[in-house]
Amino acid sequence: MAENNNLEKLRSGELWREFCDALRDSGEQILDATVPGDDLTRAEGFRYLTRLLRLSLEKNIEFASADYPQFYSLSHETAKIGNDNPDNYYQNCAVDGRREYRIYGNRGSVSYLSIETKAGSFAGGGAMAPTGHVELEQLQVDENGNFELLVSTREQPGNWLPMTPDSDNILVRQTFRDRQSEQRAELHIECLDPVGSDTLDAAEFAAQLSSVVPFVSGTAGLFKQWMDGFRGHVNQLPPNDQAMCLRCGGDPSIYYHNSYWELSPQQALLIEFAPPSVCRTWNFQLSNYWMESLDYRYHRISINRDSAHYQPDGSVQIVVAARNPGHPNWLTTAGHASGAMLLRYVEAQDYPPVRTKVVPLAQLETGGESV
Image (cartoon, rainbow, N blue to C red; front, top):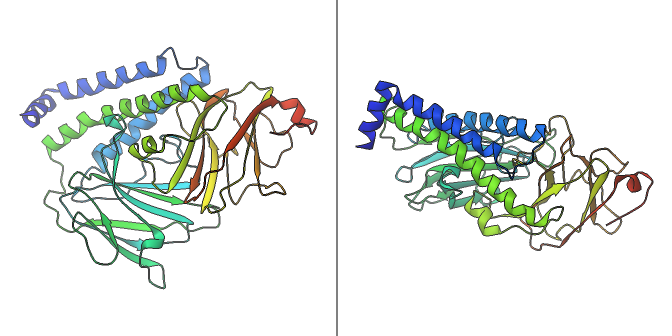
């Protein structure tokens, strides 16, 4: 019945009008009284909606076929979601837990690669349940770096990524230590038992179009809700609720410290921690209020295990400030007065505390102050 109703709305043009009206209404989140009122945050907020719209059109229309799936990126340099990692190359694709798939390609030279099956999306209020997880080290790879990985609900011999009947998407994380020197993995996917058509179906398109704006408004609403919660520990970096991160698409091998930063141009935030004794890699990043990583194409807004300068005792001190006080681990706020920040550990076995302190920037410029 709903399919027929959508098809009738498509024919009459009502479906398009509803789409435009819903998109307009999603902009009210940008105008909420709890959102910082500066022009930069307001402009980034509306730009954020245009970016989410681009991503949602790709997710829900262009790459929506689970019978003829293709990898695409749901977070990248110019469209970002949920404190996207500047060290990551993200890939996504649609699947159906009732089908079976083959992923094939070459592992490249990335430091960390995980492939996960998921159920749900940010349109459902953050319900993106993990249904299967595999990492590069668990895969059998030939001498040239090539591999195949079967994806299905039934267990398979060799390389196998589990699904459940509810699985509807795959998320790949490729994590670089140095993007300039590492070769990312090349991945392809095919459905082994497709049942649908590879041509446009009017009824299917009508349903897909109806899913576009809920993803936009649901994603924006979810991470605004997170930021409202992070206001309880401004300029601090406590551990996140790890179960919440996992429900929203987080990697079970990553430990997250999410928070909110707020500084004047005359202030600096000092962050100090001793990296875990066992940890594949770690990184820290700055994001804007909408939880988009600041523009790492042009600004140094993140730091990782390989790019950091260490103290003699092995600890790390990071300085967040509007201008460089001469510190090797300085990260710029890139014209922002507030935003999100995230410290993540990959495959860590311990989670040392993180200390933070806000100080006058002038003190750092004269060589004084530490956490």
